[in-house]
Structure formats: structure tokens, C-alpha cells
Image (cartoon, rainbow, N blue to C red; front, side):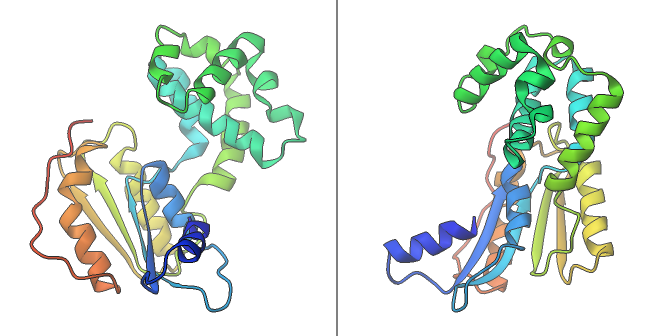
Length: 236
């Protein structure tokens, strides 16, 4: 995310000196990590981060997906496993073929190739138990490795942060984000603001939180906005 800012300033003149990392779900997780990105001398200043329903608790995600018996949830697991394999491509123990077997790895490859646009169709009627044919102990070990590199609350956030969460989110449970906020504060993050929206789902919270998000950006160096009205961003 930080590299995007450097690239943008090479392509367009007149951009502001202050930038923000803002993301939703996996993007919210990335926004929190962007606060730790190295910035070259003279680079633009990171004014703050906004994480909407940030992904977290990766150590229990695989176990939950397998037990859910909801094929659509497998996309979370498969993308996360692909990410784990990408950390060290020489580690054969975390390759998709080693972990999943030939048949499941082939299905996983189709999901990854679809870039999420057709994953629901690829995973329709797929058995989550067969797609994740690992015992509980093995799933736990793999999950711990995922959490070690992917949980966004392992280090304090050094810049102002706004974390947004819908109370009815079924993809990133509010209880998880509550724990993330508590942990970031415990670690000494200087300014973590938490806003929750009862009844809002994973997508709905985007529209409902819009005005609070813009106000946060304005407070920390962003451009002033006019009148703002929250919007309904759909269901989910």
C-alpha cells in the first residue's frame, strides 16, 4: 500500500503530502500493516490508517472454515494458504499440493485463477472436509504460522488509527475485532479510535461508517468535506 503512494507521486503532480491507508476486510488488515512500512527520506507523511472489519485471528480460520461446511467460505482458506506458501516458496511442507492433495489442490488452483470473480461457482457443492483434509493438530500448526505473519495486532500501530466494525458481521466477527482493538491498545498504540455499528453486516458497515471515516481523515490532515450522509452499502 505504501508503494502505491510512491508510484502515484511519480505519475501525477500536485498530490497532497499527507496520505492515508484505508481498507476493508483483508484490505483493513493490510492498512494496519501499512503503518509499519518503511518510508524513504522525504516521502509523504502517513496521516493515519482506517481498518474496516480487518481480517484477524488467522490461527483459527482454517479450523472454522472446515467445520462450517459452507463451501463459499473455502475461498478465505485457500487464499490464506496460498499466501503462506508465498512467504517461503522453497518450503514444500506448505505447498497447496502437499497440504491438500492433488484433487483439492487442482480445485484450489481454479479458485485462485478466478481472482474471486467465479470462486462461488467453482466451490459450489464442494465438501469442506475433503478440501481441507488435515487433522486438527495439523490445522492448528498451520494456523499458528498464518497468525504469526498475518494477524494485524502483533505490534502497536504507531500512527492514529480508526477501526470500524459492524455488529452483525458474519465474515469478521465483532468479537474478533474487539480483541484486536484491545490488544493494539495494550501494546501501546498511541491513538486507536474504535467505532461500532450495531446491526451492520460486513458490507453494510461501509456505507454506515462513511461520514465517521471522512471525519477521521479530515481531523488528521485530510481534505475537508462538505455535508455527509451515511449510505446503505447493501447487505452482508
